[in-house]
Length: 431
Picture 1 (cartoon, rainbow, N blue to C red):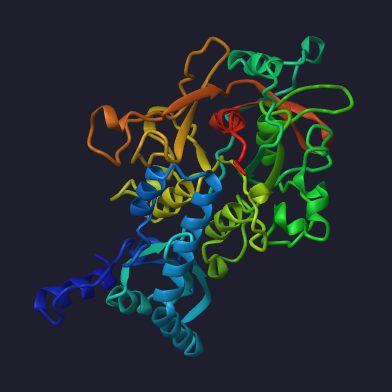
Picture 2: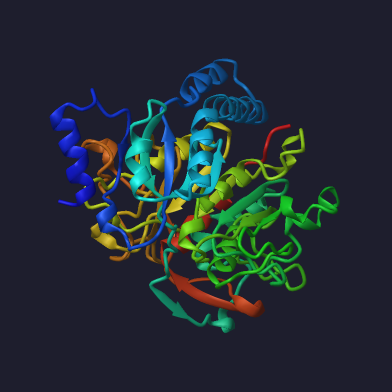
């Protein structure tokens, strides 16, 4: 048993305090040796979004009404309840026990990098529910790469005809008017299949590229890809070459925005929930605006944590409130299931509260069979039974041709290739 756990257990058994107000949801002894530990401090009071959702359902509110009401309630709760905790952290920062304090509103929580000795002080606070380790989001890497067969190209590749995207286009449903997004490694905006439909070129965005592109590490103002992955996944969402008509995406009439923090590294001590800031940005990219045109209909996520990172609790609840709040605000949030086969889904894709809130996407091949590498449930986050069935949907994910670095194309296989197919099937925001 670690010294930390031994001290906490001794205090509880000796009755030095009545009970812990909150708890530390990890063992510091299992972490890399570092001066400061990046954590997410989850507050006890959270906005009553389920209650608000019920009211909005009863009045048949539009998506934009939902967005305004939900975002307003989240910000009000955070502003009203975080003051004491932030004051405590600022004092600890002056004492050298804390770095990089970052308040959030998408769920009522605060990110910080703290000395280990401060963890128990935080957990004892009456306004704190739990202190989580702030793990860096990890890319779901493809299981295979191969060059495409350019001799057999058609307007709609097998993966698009399988889901009948070509039939939808023929009926006039191309995604025109829809804004899609991903949280990935970035997107190569100069790619011929993605250049013309970056939303940042819209006249309404003049002088504000930050409304259509988030790069919190290098602070660029024009989309780029630190890898290749985000370019490929965005290509499957909405890619089409306007010059040649070469079609790789589902929603070929849609426009896109992107956040680029996945697998970007950075200082461990200064992590402070970068992915949460990305999700806050995605729910409100242009917070100065009072119209719905800047809010994406869908967000595709091809990242997640291995279950091996959660030996005691395979369900990391710090994500749940965030994802449910995004869904309540009218945004479809999708996760790749992972490529670990029967070993289980990645976290948070394995989370299961409903069949449609922030669900996971598995992969099928050209024969509509699930490859052995496509992660499958049941979800450990609910009791075993029909409710534990996951992933909730599957889409083409093997040998999918899409955009690649430097204007090229490549076939990739993985659930990261499947997820953007589903994200492409989205709906336009209501006025």
